[in-house]
Amino acid sequence: MTEDQVFHSNRTSLEAWHSADRAFWLASRAKCRSYASDVLTRIAALHARFDVAQYGRVEYQGETYPLLAVRSRAWNDALPVALVTGGVHGYETSGVQGALDFLEQKAESYAGTVNLLVAPCISPWAYERVQRWNAEALDPNRSFVESGSTQEAAALIRLLAPLQGRVRVHIDLHETTDSDETEFRPAKAARDGEVFVPGSIPDGFYLCGDENKPQLDFQNAINAAVAEVTHIAPSDAKGQIIGSPVVAPGVILYDYKALGLCAGVTDAPFTTTTEVYPDSPRATPQICNAAQVVAVCAAIDYALNA
Image 1 (tube, rainbow, N blue to C red):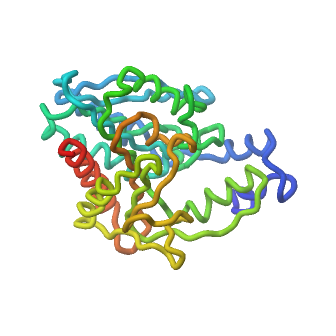
Image 2: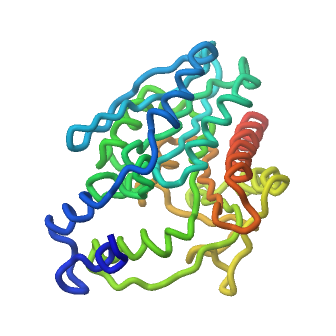
Image 3: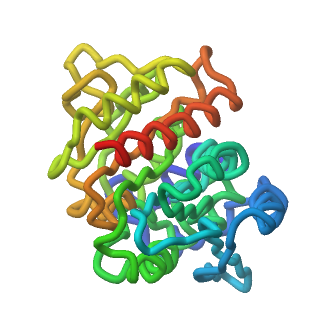
């Protein structure tokens, strides 16, 4: 599929996609990797150490993907809950791999201090096709509203319903990639019948906090830990990162609930969204995964001691 086909398949330059355009987009999304091999196999290996449960499934055009969550084995209702989510955007690889690495490498060290709940890959269809959207050309990370406006969001909301009021910290693992600027933002503009206005991609790790409860000391503690692994993104000439004002080094704020973001799915007092930059010449996949693991640990450690 050529760039012209991806971004200008609609009939007029400022006309939102019709059903035929969406069908054209969907038919051109090819599988590039395996959810079963990359994710389900690693989760299966965790059964001896954690409780694993299917909390839903995603179904598109005859394909079914089980959605799995991993919990602390010695779940104790007297303890707070730490929620880790990854792969809300399927193409953001270190969000998925970082969540799995955390489970394999660090999670057991929290036994007896916090109940862990980890959903490593919320959007498996998109993971396999290295896409931001789901098969309906919808962004799952704008769909955490009410009961959920996508299959991916609705399943997680149902899983978390019994835990509302008990989640102490939620860290949602993401990446900001060069393809945001070259593919996904232009595609969104075409889908919505809007003019694409070029932006820039920050070089480095940063956090998106909740403007309604920014918890800047919490955000700063995470960035300080991550800075030992990879560099923190600087602000641009306007004092911004991806169009939002920088409120602390490497920290911007969004209105989680108004935007329907995954990080706003609970009322946890400590929440953040990580953003790793995998296309940096100073980063590698291993560095990006490690940064996610360090961020998760720093978030949990701060929340438990605050």
